[in-house]
Image 1 (cartoon, helix red, strand yellow):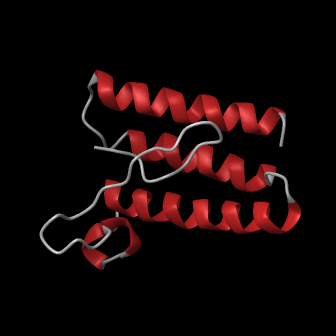
Image 2 (cartoon, rainbow, N blue to C red):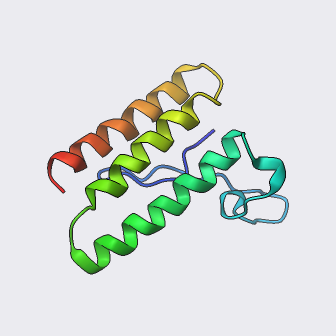
Amino acid sequence: MCFSIFSVNTAHAVSVNSANRTLEYLEFRDIDRGTYNEYRYRITEKYFELRDSFQVNRNMDTSILQDLSTLVQKSYDYLPDNLENKNLYTQLQTDIRNALQTP
């Protein structure tokens, strides 16, 4: 499992469906509601919002960063407990906190 979001200092990987090479996190289906896939989609949506805001304003929007942090925390609850997921989660939350301190 990989997060589909960038962080300020680290580029986190995204999930790619190798069969037809579509990016799974760009599509939200009814079947995804209430699953990790819903959060992966919502995190990606917030990332695009943050990216666009940064390109215009040249700083990180703190409200978007806080929303991202909340979504990442909620999505983590849907992942299997293992050190890889915990490490990715901790890295991403640390990067978000750093960005909040120096937007």
